[in-house]
Image 1 (cartoon, rainbow, N blue to C red):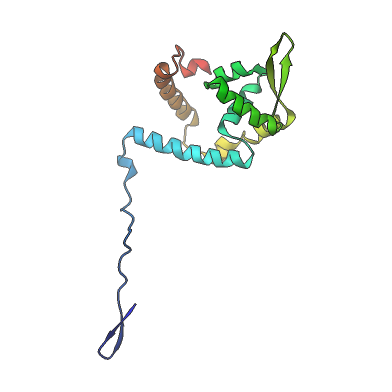
Image 2 (image 1 turned 90 degrees about the horizontal axis):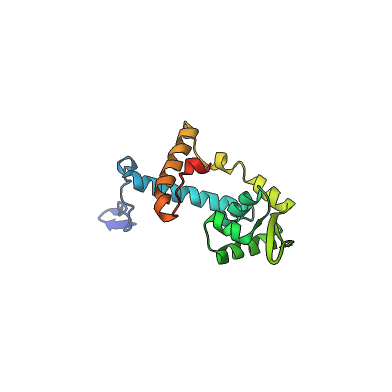
Length: 171
């Protein structure tokens, strides 16, 4: 804003904004755990946005992936997805409303239902097959990167999920 001075107006230098951003941090100095956590969150946000464009959630994508191997009971799906049965029920309700899955009475036990993927569900699953390539940066040796991630998950999952298997063995 101009300031009145003898002989006319003089432009005042702009004051720095009151809420300045702190200087950019050198992320190369971050501990590996912070890097991994930040990378996971950024990838997750990108995945969520792309899945939403397809009418899917991350949980729904997991169910469709499991169902590509064939029909399963809700209990089996919950176990394989590592969620509670009630959580799986909500996920299946949404997928069924979108016509991505169907629930049919189990012929051997009418109290149970068998869940299978529909043609629309197959198409939704197929539409996600390039997401990894589309969203992830080139990491050089993708196979080595994947192996490192599996090793991290394996060593961390032993206690959390009470598994005796490594992720590599579960491939």
